[in-house]
Image (cartoon, rainbow, N blue to C red; front, side):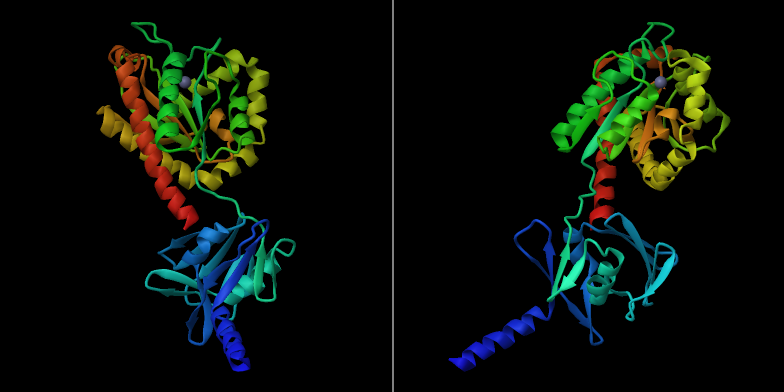
Length: 371
Ligand SMILES: [Zn+2]
């Protein structure tokens, strides 16, 4: 009997020694992550930890760097070395980051000793169990749609049918909302759902307050020339072409016209510009990617002239703490495009193609962030 008991204890120790046990705060069950022995050292595969820690990793193939985003912080490793950098400091795991069959492995010691060191209040490793707070899911779940203009601000007005930009923007946004909710199972919030005026600052504040993952502003373009044509998608930046500058002036003039003129304008100019610029810098790559995905789908789906993805300094994108873009669906000042833009079927097609662009972005983005 004693022998059997001893055998069970030995077997138990053996099996437990090959796994890291993780206890998430507030959860009753523990996770066992299998360890892999590499040259006598215990390692953990990042892909096994990702769903539990909700960490995301990205590799830079050009210089073999690995970025691990975990609990809102970034760790940078170099393949084949034991050093990593965190908050501009360098740390030594004593065993190198290793890659086997395309999968990254970190020495277990990083999770049992280094994580508790970097997050002393929340992470604790004792009695073979790593105790961690509940991680946050970073996948795209909340999307804010922002139909441009509204209420006293009609936006651009068509030359032939006198169609108002604000109505086209809202109609397309409402159709897009339906598709996103029905087919992508995300929460969609609107900065306005009817014909009302919303200041530019309130639009991004709404997105920030609701912790949106994406911000999509929908507009139609206008030009003095009736022949200007095509679709373009923007993301925030300070450097730009003169064409982009013209569209920027057009979309920003709402501040001059409807939000109290020069004094309001200086409010936006000073509006934590450096801070907001930084907030978007962090998301620049994602915003660019989202813009590209939407633009590509819009062009393929409408056969409209491709004016490309551009950068401009829109007030409405500035304060947003998430990937943010602004779409110009076509020129309401062009009689041919005006006729299309007010057409229900064409609006549905625009909504469908934007939807496909967001969907493709989300699948790629969620995978990068959550695996
Ligand atoms: Zn507009």
